[in-house]
Amino acid sequence: METQLYNAAAQKENGTKLGGSLIRQGELVAFPTETVYGLGADGLNPGAVNRIFEVKGRPNDNPLILHVARKSDARRLWREVTPVAMSLMDAFWPGPLTLVCRKQDCVPDEVTAGLPTVAVRMPDHKTALALIRAADTPIAAPSANLSGRPSPTTAKHVLADLDGLIPLVLDAGPCRVGVESTVVSLVGAPTVLRPGIVTPEMLEAVIGPVELSPALTAPLAEGSPALSPGMKHEHYSPGCPVIVVRGEQQKAARRILWEYENYAKQGKECAILATQQTRSLYRAKTHVVIGDRERPETLCQNLFAALRGLSGKTDVILAEGIPASAAGLAFMNRLLRAAGFTTIDV
Image 1 (cartoon, one colour):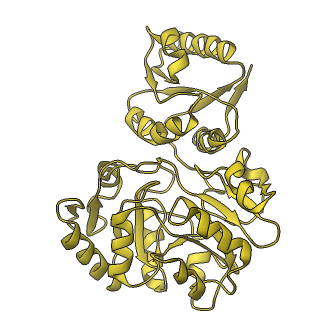
Image 2 (tube, rainbow, N blue to C red; image 1 turned 90 degrees about the vertical axis):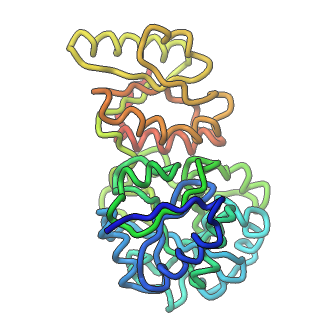
């Protein structure tokens, strides 16, 4: 199969019309959102949804998110739009917030991994919204990468994994946010199942206290179902070991340098994921500055691209941990999963 690449800015109407037509025919289309690039299919067509799992190599027990173009579209997918759901939709839609509620019968089990709930969001991206409107159906979409790889934040990343496997990629440049949406379950007490750039503090300012799933910074308990994408299975791997060093900034940096030298003595190539605050300490070492630790959203924006950029170029990646609060929670969630929760605490 030949994969077409459409520049969404220059060919936006042609690209989204073609994409919508392909979606209606049961095909897959990769498209940009403000978070990461998604791999979309008709979310009400079980056969099309199954193609997502086949192309990605994604386990079928990992539920998907349905993307809509209007707030009112959620009513046909959820059994009830509660006042809490409406408050969050009014505050954050369109935007990087996914809400999980009990599903209507029209939502296939293939989307929900057999769960009685479905995750829905309205992306804050013109191309994504135009594609959904052109398809005239909710679009089921996980990240547009092979399962287990870092999520794609550019069309180039999508093609690196899926070229020849899907018919169309809509290219709108780098994604603004860089990590997947926050996922909140509204079945029972509001609970964050996956952290994102919409932080618990931002949610609480709208609806009051929210709970945090224990799986945000730790592996999902053995035998527990994945209630949201990103809770189960290996994620974000660059193809080599990643080790997260957590602790006070200067102590962590010194330990990273010690580990770097130790790997060098073993004849292994090593790379460091650094922050603006510590870049001078690693001047003579292979390192990538991914952002400002005092502005964790910058770390989120660049993490996946950095992991992909180091893939195949190093034997080990050493990464600085930061406090898991506010946007730092989203960053640490992705970094720890990329490391398979391999950590050194100093």
